[in-house]
Length: 143
Image (cartoon, rainbow, N blue to C red; front, side, top):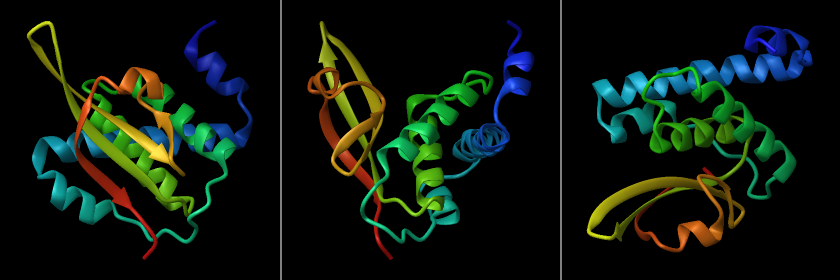
């Protein structure tokens, strides 16, 4: 089935979320190309009003970011995590981007993932992510 047909068959709330997600992923992708992460994060930072997370809503936001990222060139794991963090903050939820590195057979790799309420919600399973040494945590917490 054509992606546009799939989109048109979605509930209105999902269409809105996917559209907002697409705009956020695109803005983060362009923003990270033009300005520093610090400046972009200050610009996109939102106040968080709740520390408890509705995990179903968090998963819905992650679904929207993952889905819309498929059509944004260069939407890396950092772009996706940062976009999802921004959308979660807009929904009032605290989250944390973790950036880690791993050495696999002499090949250095870096990866970003997102946690909410102590659970990995984007970027792989907790078991897969154990191979990474966390370098930095970038959290949006209660203001």
